[in-house]
Amino acid sequence: MEEEMSGTIKKFMFINRKAPYGTVYALEGLEVVLISAAFDQDVSLTFADDGVYQLRKGQHTKGIDVKNFSPTYRALEGYDIEKLYVEKESLDARGLTEDDLLVPVEVLTSAEIGALMDEQDVVISF
Amino acid sequence: MLHIVNKSPYERNSLDGCLRIAKKGGAILLIEDAVYAATKGNAAEAKLKSAMANLPVYALSADLEARGMHESVIDGVKLVDYAGFVDLVAENPNVQSWL
Amino acid sequence: MKFAILVNEGPYNHQASDSAYQFAKAAIDKGHRVSRIFFYHDGVNNATRLTEPPQDDRHIVNRWTKLAEEQSVDLVVCVAAALRRGLVEENLAPGFRISGLGQLVEAGIQSDRLVTFGD
Image 1: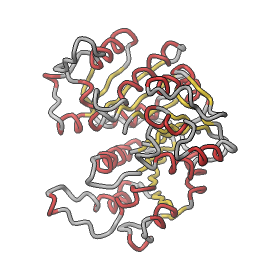
Image 2: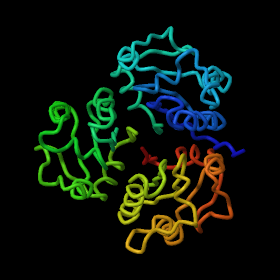
Image 3: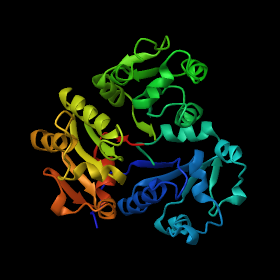
C-alpha cells in the first residue's frame, strides 16, 4: 500500500493498556502494528494494565457477535514482529501467569519496561 | 521521556501505571482531567509527592483554571501553558501518552 | 522541530481534539512545524463537513480546516476507521484527506516527535 521509507530505522513501541472488546482500541491498535511491519522498523509491543487481557487464552466471541482477533497475536511472528513484552506487575495484579497467555512473551518488571520505553524513538499507546 | 497523563486518578489507573513504569530522568505532565491529581488533598497526592523526588511533575494551567482548581495546586508541581507543553515535548527525547 | 500529532477521539465528546489543536497552534507559534495530524479511532469524526455546532461554541472542524489552509498541515483521516464510522469523501471537510494507516507510521518515522491525544 504505502511505500517503504528507505534508510531510517526507528524504534517503535506500541503500548497496549486496554482490554479487548469493551472498546475498539485493542483491535484498531493491532491494525497499526500490522501496518508498521511493512515499514521495516524496529517494532516492539508492550502489554500492561488491562492490556494483558488481550493475550488471554480461550477467547470466544460468538456470543457477542464481535470478531475474535486474538489469533492475530500468534500471527505477528510471520510479520517479523517478535518482541512482545508483558509487565509482570500487571499479570500479578490480575491473577494471571505466562501460562494463561496465547502467545510466547517476555515477562518484564515495571522498571525493565520503563528502561525499554526510554530507548524508543516513537511510542504509540492504545 | 515525557509522560503525559490525562485521566483523573479517581476514574482510571493511568497515573498509577505511569508512576510505576516512568523512570528517573523523565518528566510527568498532567493535562485534561489528570490535573485533579495535582491538587491538594486528592487521593493521589502522596503518590505524586513521592514521585516528585525522582522526576518533575508539571500541570497544564489552562486545564486547572477551566476546572476551578488553579488555587489549590500541590507545592512543587510546576505550571505550564500550551507553549510550555510544547517545550516539554521538544526537550525530552520521546513522549508517551498514558491513554 | 518537526511534530506529528495523533488524535484518537471525536470532537465535542472528548477534550482530546481541543488539546491537540491548542498544542498544534502553540507549536507553530513557537516556530516549530506541525507536518501531519493523523485522525484515528473516533478521531475521524473531526473531519466531517456536516458538523454544525451552536453559534456560541467553537467550530472544531473549521478550526482544523483553517490550520490546514494557513499552515499547510497535512490532515489525514484513517480510511479503515473512517469507513467503519460512515465518513467518506462526500462528507469530508476541506483540508482533510483520507488515506491508509501507513501515513501514521510514516509520520512517526519522518517527524522528530509524535504526540498522541486520546482517551
